[in-house]
Length: 563
Image (tube, rainbow, N blue to C red; front, side):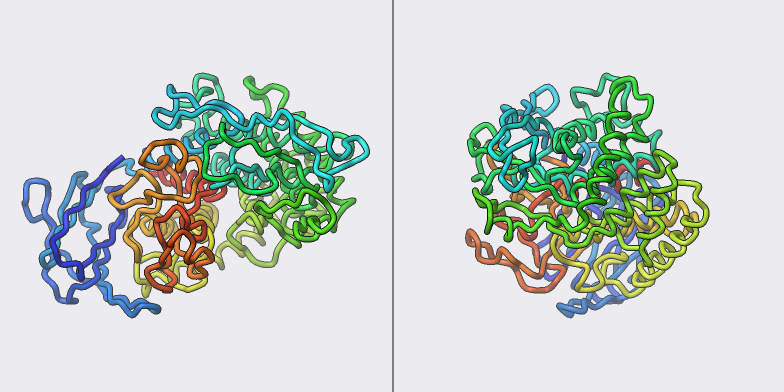
């Protein structure tokens, strides 16, 4: 999916950073150049070589970590679609201006979830070269001793098919599934007409349901199997004791277990089931789902109220129960945000005042971008789309404060974006949680706080993600002129296809470098915004995950819907 072409001379000290999938005709267009003088002569020519713009350096930004000086130039005057060439000293760089520049990326980001499906063959008619045999049917899943109940003793079996593989591994986690679906469903609710038209060419595309909702249903149906029918609690995850090797799903043979019920998983389950039940009401393709999901959500919420301290403690669990489980934890020892989200969604579904009272009690005192470990922001997004005036007004004020703080950093930023200006912006999954997540928050602010104020800044974060950043990577596989080729992803590593699956957002620069030295892994330096390596062993900077791709789906779909 090569969308633009770059040509550079042999002067490596001059580097050009830009949005590699294309700038939108009517929006801001900023390019950042490293290694040129502030008074350098710059030219932009069109496809036939005619000079159409002579931009000047609007400001010089200095990296707070590396000290590198970068010239910021604005080429927003270019509004006619086409391919242009920027000449800076001896360097020539091609970039695109085109309408609907984000559409292919929006489709690929959502299509990735089909490619991540578990327990079913992925067929060539829909997946092309990424077709594969089915694996992990999960028809004989063992009840781990930590998950045993009176109706389901340890060592007994349940069926728990379908769902998505979570990340670079092959396990399925309720906490992350619920967050991922919640984020995408809220983006769907904001842009229903757009997603109703979006065709991702999946097996369900011919039915009457938008493809996004069909894809969510594939995972929601798995999630329903993770609730214990005898008490309403929800298992934290379905997992092998240890991570599989980098082999295909069909070649995996470890036993799989459902492990310990947790209050966080159960509340996340309650929240997303209530949200999905509301949005799927009256759906002819899934006529029984809404009532089933509402009942499941109510039961889960009651279990969580009765077990407020049932946090997932894997290390402690392994001291008591065998086999030991050493896969991802999604551990979280505070459930107030999960309860706020669950109470919110249940109230908006049922109008039961008891849930409203709980939501008021759990409401946060400031807005935070939602992540799997802090889902309060998902409840905020739900309230913004509702008509509950008192709660809504308080939350709007919190969102405004967040948005104003974010955009205040842009005039002095190295890459003309709200993201990437503080060391704390970088870390595990930063491109999703801080870059995409921050942009989504700004889009909500633009729609509900002050129309026209924040959209520009959300697009700046998208520019950062797609190439205008310190590494020069477009951080989505299959897109741009320099994108990740070796993500930490078992499916891509084992499929025999040289190129990774397209549409995957990698985690991004991570100065903690937890994987340093693994498999010969060498980071270029410890600068926060450059701590990225396109290497299969780099789980800290180059893994993929459904929650990260959910943020990409939500952001790219929203931008494409607007523009």
